[in-house]
Length: 291
Image 1 (cartoon, rainbow, N blue to C red):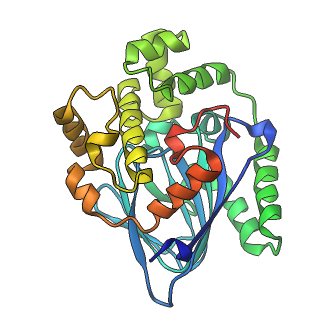
Image 2: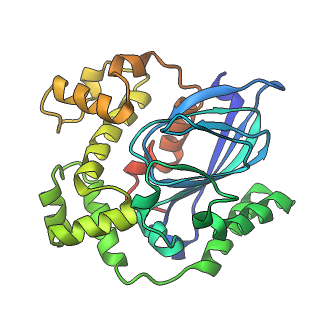
């Protein structure tokens, strides 16, 4: 499969929802009937994915398979997720921590590293009407993006600690921040408040989040540099190559050389297009105020 078999478009959410979403994105995969292509999702924020056409298969962390649903809903993740796609069309919505606060009613940590059937999981029931609206519409792509925006605008709500969430997120994506104590200081929070906020809206402990950011900066640089040598892209906050290799095993569940040997027919093309259009290759690198 080449990039010519994949088409991705990214749409800015309404200005009133700035900081809630990575983007609304439309992915179309063109394959022969019965053909499927596999890849690995990298660690990311929570996502809602609506499929129209043939349906994907996704391998959960416990080895079980999610298949047969047109609505795949994931919590924030700290590990790769194996999936395969047939010829399909998909609307995706990436929920940033502020978006989780404004549109989800459960703690992010309770759904971290999960892949769920959005049609049956109670935490995602509020989004089933959006899937149904997209399934039945004959609007063009731009108007469908407007439909998604209108759906969330109608359900938006005030969040009393929105400023704290944004401050933590803003500090988290700053490459200069590389410790939980520094993250708390930058966000002007006590360590205890930071830990509580991160569990509720970010899904992980402060240190886990910083570790994930460090890995994602390295992975994104690796993918965009067309599989450069790891030594050329390793984040400066790794103390040495052994530190990087240890973290890579812990997060990606494989060695750097094993990952480099994998084919990434979906993610490679998607990340390159995302970097060109959005300015960052991965959701986890988006700044909270970005639209």
